[in-house]
Structure formats: structure tokens, C-alpha cells
Image 1 (cartoon, rainbow, N blue to C red):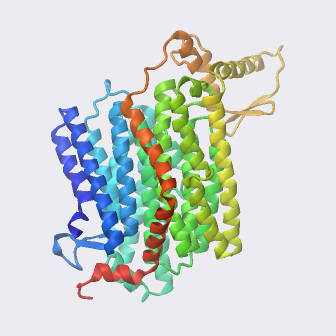
Image 2 (image 1 turned 30 degrees about the horizontal axis):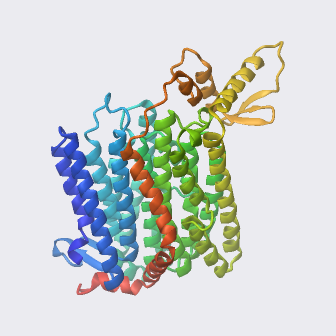
Image 3 (image 1 turned 45 degrees about the horizontal axis):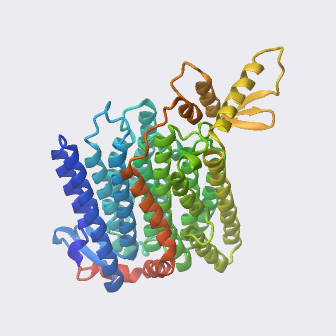
Length: 564
């Protein structure tokens, strides 16, 4: 079965080459990409069964045992492989239905499929990497691919967001290189199993320096506060399928790297308290940002940051129960977050915008769209008995079992974050789906009317003050972006219209392509399936956590037959 281990990396790379050669034949590119990712899903499923039954599978590439690159498939790695393969296949099918960027007539995007498959290969390689340098290579594959995908369409907003993303990730790559050089100088190897054996012999200060370098590097990738400020400005400008796969997967690769290195290299970490404080701040600051947003994409970007805190909470506890809860929550969150961003793409396609000021009546206009948003939104908020609720309960039980004051504060913080998440998605539901389009249009006109009256001395109105990105009219606060949207909607010469105006003019966008709806519905159903199989899945994640706690078995599996 070890012969299957490299395939999740090799197949997408072969697909990259094939789709590059087929750049003049878009249909052939789509077929090749879909077949490759379907094959990756099958391979990942077979590996999950095999690893759970037979134990960790290891392949030394080129047969260079002890010297070459090791690919290691344990329970954690293959679970992440399977979930990521399902998600990327769904996103690929969605992007085919959407036409990739929505503006493909103006911009040639034949590079999309090779780039997307390279991204998938990088994600798979990161999960299977058995040494730190191979993990670094995986991150660089993700960086180059994601920059191309972020800037598809070439708009100013996308290039600006892509620049922010690249600058932040180049900094993290430099830190990673410094960490690699420090580690190699200290222990003479970058193989994770060998590093785990030799770190115990280092002075504590050197080991702590290596841990800090790796932790900061991966915290940037995972968007852990305060290293998360780049994310909300980078993701929302990209095409919907790109945003979906970034939100669902890329931050989780960083979380995976934190789980792997903390459990394998630093099991008795002196930084557990720091991780738990960072987890609490990530949850609270992220969700406070989410409830302040007036655009669905930005709201979901902030909830993405916030819920990373739950995963770091589990890692910071440094117990089997905590790590098992974190692994379960990662699998749950990949599916939910990707599904929600795909739904947002459907909203933008159907209503022409994701700004809450422009939206209303979507539940009546498209009941299916309402269901597709409502189900994962409630799951994200942790409504019983969905997997989001089960994952949070698992983490809270681990926190209570830990019993430390900080762990109990995190339980309280996690509960508050869940309630505020419910508030954020409920507000979105009420404004975008429940109120009528006429009410949304009237609100825009009211904002403009207040602004015009403020400018006339003979019509006193409540003070209108712009402060820290918000406009305060009396006791009500609106985002400055809301005011710009309202001006465009009220301007008769502006081509920008809200949903009410589109309905009145008979210019409602075309109905949603079936190939966009089906993958989205499939991921929503997959999120519900996680709830149905939560018992066996929790059992699996507990076994994965037990494997992570048993460093000796990982080292023995990798170094079997290798001269020490």
C-alpha cells in the first residue's frame, strides 16, 4: 500500500503538465483536471482505510533511506488529504460552472487549471511531508500558485490584495528559511523523525528558539492573531472558487504544521500558555471584526480568523483530548468554510453583489440559495446537533478536564465566540435573505438623504461623523463602504444597481448554472454527513491524537531499517 502514498502529489503534478500542454483546449483541461482530482479523492480514501487498519505508511523517495525525502502517511495526514481532496474537487467543478472568474471574455485564464492543480499538489505534499525542507517546498508551491489565482482577472483590487498576500508570505518564508538553517545547524538534519530524536539533547534555550521560529512562521500561515491582519483584505477580492479554497484549505495547512511540530518536536512545550492566549485573542478579535462587517465576504473572512482560535485552543491544551478535538474541528471547518464561500459566490452571481446594503429578499427570490446558506451558517455557529456544535463541545470538554484557570477562560471565550458567530450570521440572514429588496433600497436612500441634509445649513440633522472607517448617524453606525454603495445606488447615471433596482428594471442576473449549485450542495451535504458520522469520526480523530502523542511510534515507523 506504500506505493499509493506519493500519488496525491504526483497525480496533480502530472495533471499540471497535461493541462499546460492543452492550454488551447479548455474543455480538455477541464476533463483532465476533474479526472485527476477524482483519482486523488479515491487514493486518499483508500489510504485512510489502509492507514487506520495497518498503521503509518512511509515512502523514501528514490530509495534514499535516511538521506532522501520521506513521505509519511499517518492518520492525521490521510484525514487531511481526504478532506482537502473532496473540497478541491468540489471547488474545481464549481469554477468550471462559473467560468472560472466570471470575466473570462476579457481575460484569458487558460493558466487556471495548471495553477490550481499545482496548488493541490502543494497542499498534499504539505500533509505528507516527513521533513521540514519538504514542508518549506510545499509552502512555496502554495505561495506561487495562490498569487496567480488571487490576481486572476487583473483588476486593481485583486492585484493590490495579491501584493499584500505575497509580501506577508515572503516574510514568513524568510522566517522559515532561518528556522531551517537554525535547526540544521543545531541537529544536523531536517527529517522530522530525526529532529525529534535529537532535540532532547539540545540546550533548552536553543530548542526554544527553534520552536519560536517555527511557531511564528506557521502562525502567519494559519492567520493566528496578531499575525492575521493580512487575511480579511486579501481573500474577499479573489474569484469565488479561489476565495473558497483559500479560506477552506490554506490556513488549515498552517494549523496542520502547528499540530505536527508541536506534538512531534515539542511535546512538553513551554509555550502552551502563549498558544492558549493567542487562541483566545484570535477567537474574540476575529468575531468582533465579523459582526462589524457590512459585506458577506468580509464577514466570513473574519469568522475564518476567529474559528482558527478553536483549533489553536486544542493544540495549546497539549492533551490527547485537546488535540483530538482540534483535528475534528479542522476537518469540520474546512468543509463548512469552503461551502459558505461557494454560497457567497452564488449570491454574487444571483444578486450582483455581496454588500448587505444592496441585498434583500433572497430567500423568496431563491429558496434553494437560502437553504444552502442557512445550513452551513448554523453549523458554523455551533447549533445542536450539527458538527460545529459537536466539535466545540469536544474542545470544551478537554478544556474543562484540563481544569486550569486559562483553559476555563478559553471555554468561556469559545462559548461567547459561538454566540457572536450566531449573531453575525443571523444578521446576514435577516438583511440579505429575510427583509424585502424595497427595504434595502430605502435604507440606501435614507443614508444619502441624511448626508445631503447634513451638507445644507438650513436642515439640521443628527451629527454625521466619520471615525475609524465607520459613519455614525445619530446613534446608528454604518461602514464607510456602505455610504459609497448608497451613493452609487442613488446615482441615476451609475451602472451600479442594487437588487431592488435590478428587479424593477428586469435586469436580474441569469439563473444559477447547475454545475455551480451541485458542488455547493454537495459540500453542504458533506458537512451534514460529518454530523451523521460524528461518532466514528471522533473515534478516528482520537486515534490520530493518540498517534501524535506517541512520538516513538512515528519515529520507529519512519526510521525502520535506517542506520542511526
